Length: 218
Image (cartoon, rainbow, N blue to C red; front, top):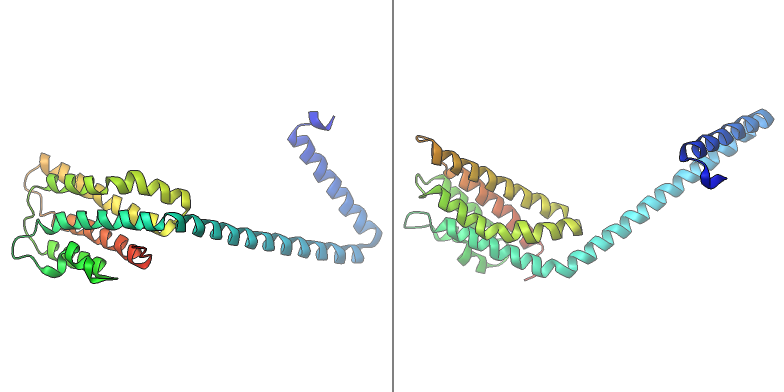
């Protein structure tokens, strides 16, 4: 008979039983019953909080374990994609190019060198008036970052590596903005210099590079 009862009827029956039990308890001995009830509620809440804490710890441990399994491969793939994308932008700068803005060479300088080179590159791009055909720049960047969007992002979402996902999402957003600007320039003349949009993408590359260096596995 219980198997045929709807969830709403079962819930209503349970609520009715609880209400009747509370009413009966208060009617028999209100003071003692209230004290016992408060103690039970406190115990239940403490148990719930403890369970939530334990579950959070276990979930974080599992996330860290899964990240450890793929961190070396992921950070390596990200580093190479960042270097290639940054180098293509670097080669757009007119000669003589600032050596400190070369992501390929500066990456060999150890921890922190790659994001610093990318930040220097972003400043150099902002100071440049002409970086060539914008649509070609977008195509080059998109080709280097395709692996990040199609291969790495889904993996990070499954693992729960939220900070890196946020930085990669910002990078993708900057690239979308640059792509939209390139689309507009193809259709309308007289638009202002777009070096700032490219520099914003390079800055986003630098923020991803910071995470890669903090979790340097290669």
